[in-house]
Length: 126
Image (cartoon, rainbow, N blue to C red; front, side):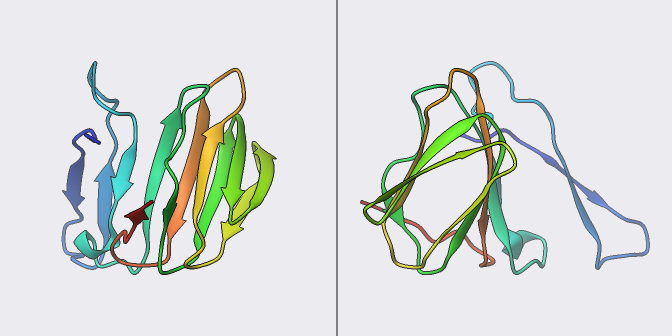
């Protein structure tokens, strides 16, 4: 996956504050934003995804819990053997070491924030 470039901003006199400025992706670039906390002194990492209808993630697993915030659209989550439907405003949490994935089952774009309680994203694709 290719993710768009982003600019980091230094806050004068405050090395303990980081700002990562977003820019819209160029044609052909993925709209997914990947943030790894280790690069900013944060213990949390995340993806912000923008998935077209019928697309989503492949089945994968993490050694920690993953939390999804549905910002827009409709998603089906497969967590272990359970299928869960969620829409804008819903929050879904998957246990550690349990295979999971999401799929955009709506007719419009699906926007998710995928929160990883780790300073690096550790994922094993299945």
